[in-house]
Length: 476
Image 1 (tube, rainbow, N blue to C red):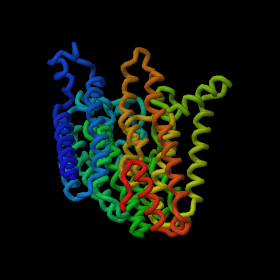
Image 2 (image 1 turned 180 degrees about the vertical axis):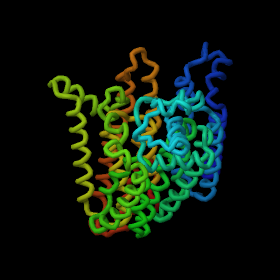
Image 3 (image 1 turned 90 degrees about the vertical axis):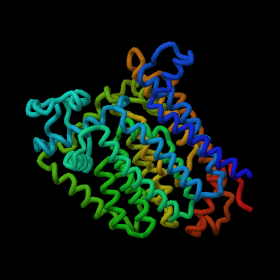
Image 4 (image 1 turned 60 degrees about the vertical axis):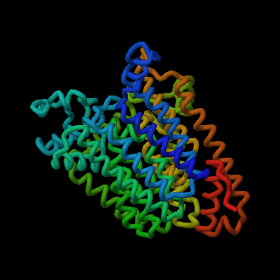
């Protein structure tokens, strides 16, 4: 009876979420109609009004599915509703970010004008004839060359060749990438003998849904090769894993750091295909020479790009200002800390192939905790699939708080209010500390033989960690 009630609760939560997504950000209209609001809020405010109830529903859904044992039927329900959540957003024009317009522009000028986007920015006079209201007028940094890696550029060009010329078309293709991400997640969960219903952490996450299927960020296309890297590695196909990691890095550079997660004896076999794939992608733009990184170096030094830094970053900035150090010193300290984390992880002994999962989670978590100059909401999307494998209450909650960073754009002086930063990052830091202590206690309670016996030890640790995360009783 309890299982039936919980399954019906999941149905109810899915229906409520589908109704909210189906309102196409018009929940504020309904609130005006019933007299709760007096006037139509700004687009960002409408988004937050919509995402708050969706976040509460999502948290409840994750909590419920952790207690449902009938994984097969729950999985079908989770996937069905996930599709219903995404479809209403695809026809909408992006508002929170204009990045997708840049993707479309760079794909078009590569194919039609045969222009190298690392050399020629959108404002260049040679591209005057391509300027239009539908795409060009929405592009940001018109005076700057591209910031996106070569793999992403090849993908933009390919999409234009097959007829993708609008944000809606781009997001429709992203739905196919999303399906591939789901398949790979299920394969990894099966390989690790973990319950398939964990995909709800990815599939129902409202931050990810809006960033991929309203804003249309390219990270949705980076996730399949990223998970392909993990799956191939678990299956023992090391060279295929290296090629997949190379493809993910060629789309977004951050997966490069996952090389630190590869065990010592397999690094060369991983690195060779990785370098070949990344190098092959950049060969198409080699004429750019020293400008091959485009806007990326400027991005790291331009104060205009600072967005939503964490409390650690704000503290370092305050110390640098107090001691009259250059702002670049903050960047150097953060990079040194990240490098230290990567070195520590690379030297950690790997007792089983499954260690690649926990190390990858640690790499991305460390990177996101030290990220600078900007922590845009969609940057977290690369970690969300890994939360299905290494559940973290801290990061799940943070994904629900991160959308409030958009309030920065509504302030009079364009600065982030400190209370928003504190509301985002204080719970994250405290919960991460709590999880770390809980995990250490679980490790201490596990017999030494089991802790060092490969797959058995890792399974025990993961089960103990999951019980602490979801308060799920251990099996008798």
